[in-house]
Length: 125
Image (tube, rainbow, N blue to C red; front, side, top):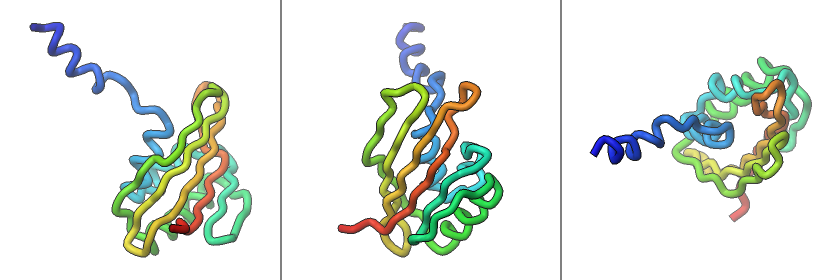
């Protein structure tokens, strides 16, 4: 019986990877938690405005986006994590103002996956 209990506890012991964490932070609309995964400079594109920002600037831009678009849910649409140094994910974020497609590119820096690019586009249905 103790072995069976261990099997149920196993998911608690496995740490969520960066792609899953991003989904969680997007769903919560937490620019603060999301910014912890940002590289020192991040290429951010929201509403056809694109530039490279510092971690702090990128957080402020994302914070404004979340204030204008309250998240209700998120779905991981696509994930590429076959390369241990680079990952890519596409999410569909449902908000009170509609759906958005969010693409994230991550790069491994000092054994930690960091967001180097974040693109937010209106979801075309």
